[in-house]
Length: 168
Image 1: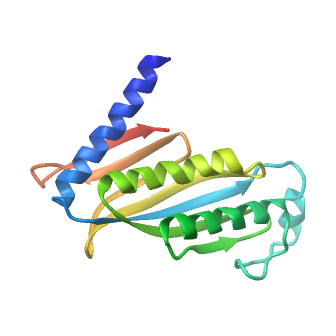
Image 2: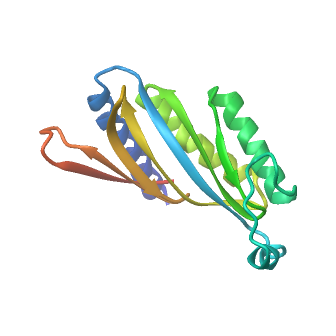
């Protein structure tokens, strides 16, 4: 058990080190797109029969949407981020950007996943994806779920890609 924890920490540190190399000490931006799904058993059939498109201000409120609204507030206040939600009554996505050092960006990514795991009983992370930016330039991409994230960055020689798999 302790070996897996240590390995997980080292994977995140290697990723942070590569992001430090890419950023050259400057700030970066992390775009995070979370896809969330309803984790309960009731209410799923209703939307299958009546598929209505809802944005954050005109959806029918239920336990799932109330929990996602709390997540939106948490993100907006914690990261001073403008959040772009796209919600249905039992699934949706939340996109936002965070600026900071590589260490701060990794912390933000981990914290958001942890927040959903600890505070959402009716919503779970189905998938996540996003990008790392240095100024206007795309510096890396990532995709995964709440358990494993694959990050693709340029290697030191600039000719190849480097893949990190980090576990949460």
